[in-house]
Length: 292
Image 1 (tube, rainbow, N blue to C red):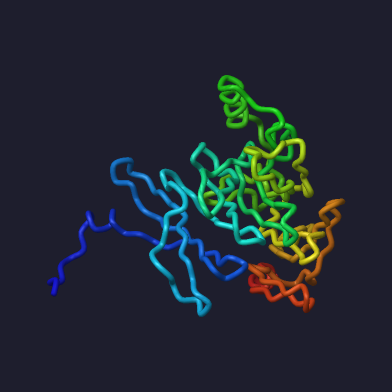
Image 2 (cartoon, rainbow, N blue to C red):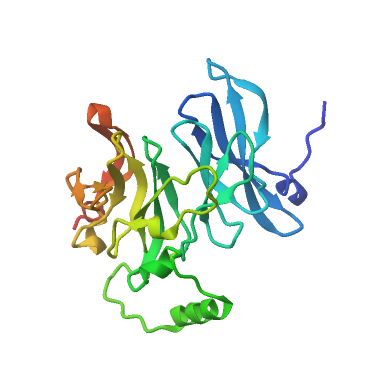
């Protein structure tokens, strides 16, 4: 038996944490994220691992590391046929969408979004990928979606202009720790799923479905692959109410319709569209909590 001892700083470098877990649609495998610390580089890293399951859901064999983990690979999302995984990686500076075959092969980058990608969801018919990405109101869509790129000098100039440009603040709730000033908001985009031998989705095939000075988060598809649900605060009085509703965004037109009643903050949700039921975690609005 090993004698107990005090925890030391050296021990902390060895700690591994489990992050996002994703069960394959056929239930045969689970993908999960392992977070570690690189002591030499003094930075966090994360990799995606795979574990096979039997019919009773018990582990079979030993886990296999699927991605390199030299940077941060996260948010695994299964294809409907349980063969491929989407994931986010910052191995090229900003988080972009990558695709990997779980039976072997190298990961391929799918996006080159100007400000990176936040979340992704694969349509049930396997034909489309919905994702959210930050966008500023003044961003040019061609530059935003990678149809037009900047060289090193242009990128430096763009970043400097963004840093020092004049900002007019007209809202009470205009900044947040960890985010800064609300210059950019999470918008919803869609793109076709690439064929097996395509390295990068044609940026001209990507479409932006939302706009505005509010965030669209937690994308999920309806079973017919015709609409995408998101959590969004579109209240006219967003500074006071903080209402977050469930909305459905049409794939073809981008038309939005609200499916909750605007009285709660929806924190997260899980929908059973076949039964026309959406279960969500919600809270009283900020105004109600403050007695306004």
